[in-house]
Image (cartoon, rainbow, N blue to C red; front, side, top):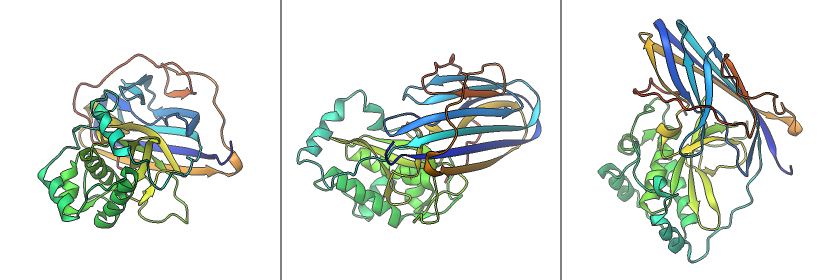
Length: 332
């Protein structure tokens, strides 16, 4: 395809425990999505020790894998490998039509947009949000597209990118009170403000291919997060306030939800284990001239430690964890 780029990704999550784990039930959100701008050519998950794996869809259309391990272990490793082809989005206009805000207001009663226009567990109105908006003079202008571009720019300039300054469960107030955070927090802040303007906004998890020419704050050895806002005429448009750019070339999309909790890479419970340590390794490689692995044969393997899937495979039966998760993946 003209202008398409191909990426190979390897994402390793290694859990190390101080005591034996007798059983582990985990939900994974690691499979890149398929849409008009992205083709998933190959995806597989390998676990050590082997686990039972089943594939499902969540309420937002994201692909999940439910993992169940009944073998005693002190180290558990999950390796997800993907090959994805990304198609550039056409150039955006400078401004939208004069009736854009009216069209956005008409979405207020839309069932499809409801989840992305109202508070969610980690994103909700608060005095800290109101104070931040007032302190930095943030308000929507006459054009919603330009307003979102300016909002992304303000967040990039006013916030300080400090790895380790927040946790995966930090609400947006933590960032707004300290002006310190990581990509997850930048995304939560932009979503909170966009929703306050009546614009549907959702949290996107994925990967960012980093090059020597990359500018701004970029993730290192981790997943990335950005924002998508639904706009008239354009549909869902990606904004990355961490790097003050639109989500385009180099962005590989995994899933979208209301906030981080909906799309955390790993989420589950264990029996035993004592204290735990999570090590993460992520490698994103751009394939020259469209080279790279093609679609792998076979479908979901529900009995072994490896699952290989292609586009169009049916989902497996649903299993869900019923207790709070272990700490999630580190992120940028």
